[in-house]
Image 1 (cartoon, rainbow, N blue to C red):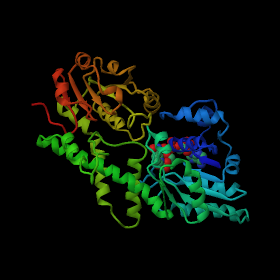
Image 2 (image 1 turned 180 degrees about the vertical axis):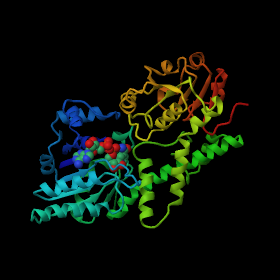
Image 3 (image 1 turned 120 degrees about the vertical axis):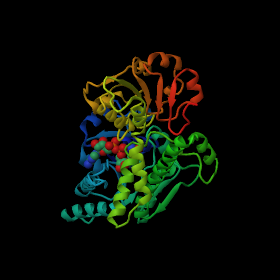
Length: 443
Ligand code: NAD
């Protein structure tokens, strides 16, 4: 099949590459000429495990092309995926300008039937706006061209995006005509050989499904984070509580880890957008509002612990930070907890030495040449001479550190662990103080 993917970010590039890998001819369009240049010269603009190989293989086979040429991209695909960003507006609602710009381009330039598939995360009712935008442009041209609009929200996780796309749990398709459903069924057939994974529904339900999924996962995290704070006060251990409830199949183990708050490009923005959508309908989402408030507070929990130990004035103190990305296996720092932690430490007069296995360039891009941030070449280099260590992202390489070396490197031998990586008793055996999230203090 001939497919166009509009937007070559985390979702669009993975979608395009994986669809090409199944034999489709895919053209990826982006308005960011720099991204397209990198891709056309054999590079990858983002860090995503396994993606470079799939991209290279399919580009070499001539099945995957990258372009900034809008007319060529509209002309190429019978199926046109929209996978552009939908960042939060001032009021928390999703900004649809990029989605609607992509839709208008299709209406402005299409000369044959198109199935326009919304893959971006968009509020309920957006498919109607996409339809109207295309119809308007066609009407302007005096053209009566058949087209369909479908909603196909994406559930991939950054850090495991290729694997998730290749082996999805389910494929949600919102559509209102058979032609669209049949095309989607054919396109996704190679990804569901073991069982039928297509869940077909109306457009609005599909749009709401994506928000419901992210809101539910964020709720589990905030719920556990609040319980962790209580556990600390009560001398209970949230890790044991997690195991105790996760073993109940009605609850399950996923997304029950207490930590220093969720970040990323999806949970914070989608929780906000759903609250906004509900408010526009005159409905308050009280649970979700609390989820967001709890998370905002949780991102500051590590600094609260630092302040409790070192005082509010951190002048002249340098802290080591391990982990900048919002989660492991990605260089994405959108809404990352590290950004709040660093800002709060700097605001109290401290300096920081930071290390992340892949997000250092992204951090330099974000913080520029801020003189109070030192970029270390490795975790131990970050720790050397620092007052204390803060762990913000649970990268595998932080899981078994040289505790003796750490004790010698840090001025005050204390680890503030925002991801509960270690067994407290083990760390303390090395003579280090250990403050984690929801775990008992040293006795
Ligand atoms: P991204 O910011 O990485 O990529 C978006 C790309 O779209 C950018 O490269 C941008 O230049 C391009 N773009 C913007 N306007 C364009 C236009 N008119 N024509 C062509 N290209 C255009 O975003 P992302 O993380 O890939 O997310 C895309 C959408 O998918 C969002 O709605 C997001 O909520 C959703 N989503 C993201 C994830 C994730 O893990 N990142 C997972 C599921 C869903």
